[in-house]
Length: 317
Image (tube, rainbow, N blue to C red; front, side, top):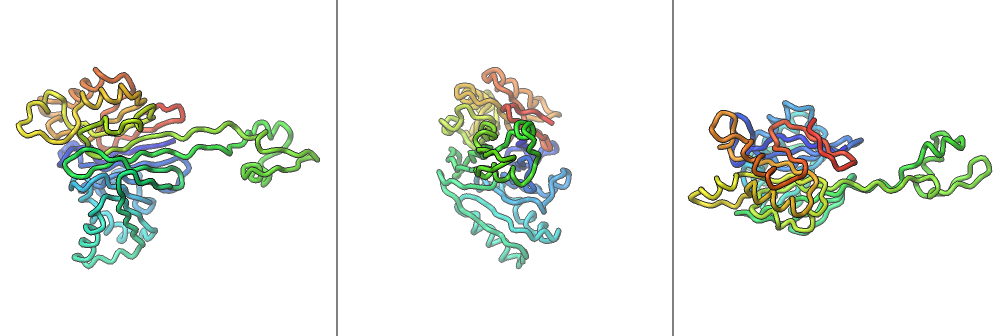
């Protein structure tokens, strides 16, 4: 399973319904989790979930607008107070290192754990335990980026049913086969290729920062399992703005993902004008996307949890 928990889904500022941007990502049979963006009060949102700061391994920041990273100082301090002294890595665009060093210096904050800060550039690639990640540039008022995440393929899963059929129960010999080594059982030589299942392809997803041009993601959208992308306005609202801002509309986003064959779309970063108590509800965004996109669609709310299964189907939990 690949699981996502939305900790903040508002654009620009917190509202009664939504906090600002933050998204947790987890992989099955993993003892850690990953955070994408860390808007103000992200640690408050975490308290209302099962996520713990002690198991947070890495934070990825899409761009340096406050609603995407102002929550970092408080979270880093709370990690120390919780005596969660395991190392933490933060990946962000140029400037994130200066920001964090300034905060810890001015506040005389001694974290007590190893904090690794990596400033990335467009097209950089990184390899983690369960996935690889590539940095993709977007179009916004400041440098903004998307993270293309490709889960590792599973290529050494044994056919236990076949092994049990010849009398070989789980043992250290299974490990030898998984490591690609031949073994001898009951006087017969067994080759790994004869007892290994077909490769299971890893799932693919993109978690994008603020972006006015969904089409800039190009070929990375083709046959993508899941795209998490901002959808700040409907087209009508955007067209009526006296001052244009570099954000995506529902219509623009839908047109691109339909053309590229994206299998699942979760829209987030919703402008505060779309709310439960006003005249403009979030269903306006949903309907505009759905009119142009035939894949599986969700509009994220705070604390929503989604699961991407092996069949490339996203379900809300």
